[in-house]
Image (cartoon, rainbow, N blue to C red):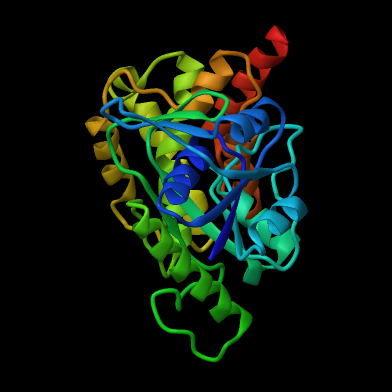
Length: 317
C-alpha cells in the first residue's frame, strides 16, 4: 500500500515517520521550511523516553509529484488542522481520503467533495507536540488511528460484492494492518461516527472552556465542572439529533476520562487561541453549532463560548 500524508506536523510527522521507519511506502506533501527539512534531514521523532530518531522520508510539494515519487498512491491521510484560510482537503481525485481533524463537520464536508465512498473518517489519539519543522515529541499515553467507512456496517467483515463501498472498507482494513505493523494502534470500526463524536465530547469542550477561562484541565474539572458537563451534554444532544448512536453513559464516561488526565493538560486549540495563532475554534466549536442547527438542536452554551472567544480574538487582532 502506497500512503500519502498531507502535512508533516505533530500527527502526520509521527504517524508517517513510524510507518516509514517500518519500511512502508509512505510520502509527505508539505511546504516551506517543513519541506526543506524533510528533504535535507528527514523527520525527527522523540519518544516518551526522550530517545531521538531521525528518519529519511519521501516528500513533495504536490500529490501529483508524490504519486510519481512513490509509483502510485492508494490512500491519503489528511494530517493537517482545519484552520481559517487553509485548504482543508488534498488535491486528489478517486483516491480514498482519511480525515483526522478534530471536527465533527469535516467528514461530511469531505463527503460532499469526494463522495462518501472515497472518505474514511478517522479518529487520532495521541499526545503529540510539534517542536519545530519536521520535529515531533510523543508523550506518554495511547497512539492510535481508528478508521471506518461513511456507510459503515461492513468494515469489520469481508467485502461482499466488490462495490465501491466494499473497496473503501478494504482500504480501511489494509491501512489498519499497516498501522499495526508500525506499532501504531487502531481499529476498523463499523460505526466510526460514534468515535468521531465521542472524541469531540472531550477535545472540543475542554478546548473551548479552557481557552475561555485560560486554565488547564485541573481547573476545568473542579471549578468549572458544571459548565464542562453542560457543554458535553450539548454535544451529545447534537450527535443524537444527527442520528449518531452514542452510548447512554457517554458524558459520565468522558468526565471520568477528564479526571484521569494530568491537571496541567491543555488542548492544541486552546494553546493556539491563547498564543494568538490561527486556530480551530470555528472548525470545532462552530461546527457543533452548525450541526446543531441542521439537527434542530439548540446549543446556547456553545454559542456563548464561541461568541466570547471570537470577540476576544477580534479585540486582539
